[in-house]
Amino acid sequence: MSTFNIIIQGFARLALLLVWVLTPVVNRAFHGGWLLPLLGIIFLPFTTLIYVLVYAPGSGVTGWGWVWVVLALLLDLGVYSSPARHAVRARSGRADIPS
Image (tube, rainbow, N blue to C red; front, side, top):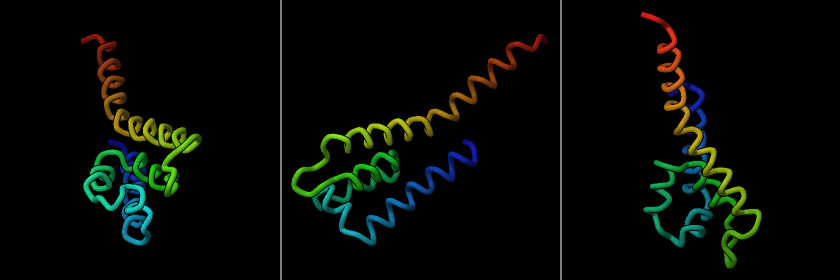
C-alpha cells in the first residue's frame, strides 16, 4: 500500500472519529447506534463520513446526497483496489522480460 493511500485513509478515519466525538451528527445519522459507525471507520471511512455529513434529520439522505455517498464509495473502493492494480502491473511487467 502506498504512502498516499495510507494518508488518505488515515485522514478520513481521523475526520470521522473527530466528527463522532465532537458533534452529535453521527448519532443522528445512525440513530444512536455505535456498530455501523465503527464498521464505517474500519472498512469504508469516506463513505461513512460523507453519509454523516449529507444526512438531514427527518428526511435522511435524498437526491444529491446519494450522489456524494456513491462517489465516496467509489473513492473507498479505489483506495482498496490500488494495491491490487499495482501488483498486477508489476507482474505483467516482469512477464515481458525474457529469462
